[in-house]
Length: 98
Image (cartoon, rainbow, N blue to C red; front, side, top):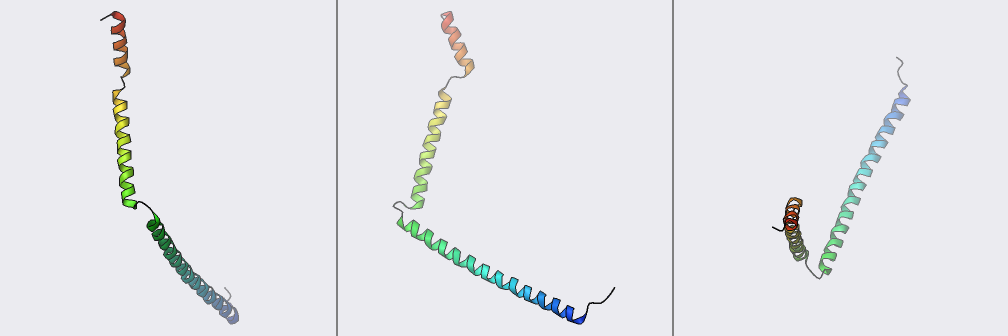
């Protein structure tokens, strides 16, 4: 194996250091950008909630009650339908005059 010249090692080392500095700097800037974006998003969400006529908790309770009522209505309607066996038996009895 041949050794790299001293000047080439120095250049490679300098490039590695410069690349590491750039990566670290971009990471810090990325975190700062993420933090600022989060702050802006939270502020916008707070403004939106303050402008709502009905508070989110009350809205959720109302919607849940409506969903439960619709579910119960569906269950009652489904259970009140005759099963094919019962419908067939009833029809046979009606035809037989029983």
